[in-house]
Image (tube, rainbow, N blue to C red; front, side, top):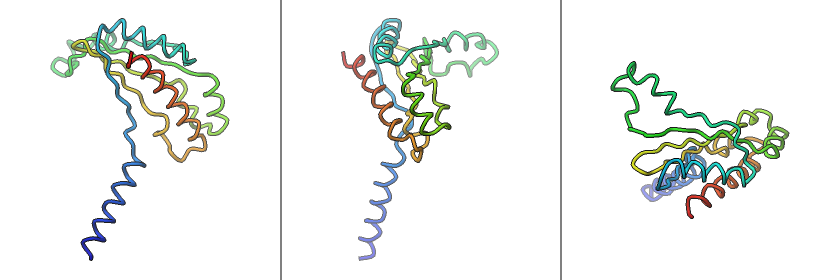
Length: 156
């Protein structure tokens, strides 16, 4: 009987932790040319009312340190690393109204890491920053809208 209770407690703990502690980083992949993928993702965000306000070319910035960092430079061999920094004013306003601290999320970003004809898309999930936030319902909705936009371009 004690074994059964231990198993049930362990299972309940595992289940609870898996729902509370979701991976804070969503990852997607797109095959094909980086410039085409980059453009499609950027346009899809814009069409979904997530306005791209800045596009840092992280890979180009890192190349300035190639000689200094030697073997520690770009160990995964990415050919391109760029971010799309974006914001939706409606969400920004409403999230800040509910939880001013979560205003730190604006702007949001997606990082694109490309090699071997595959673009890896990385997105930090707003809903996982502070699940106790008074703005959590909006953060989940915001995240769902961004994921919907990304999936629409990935699944073409």
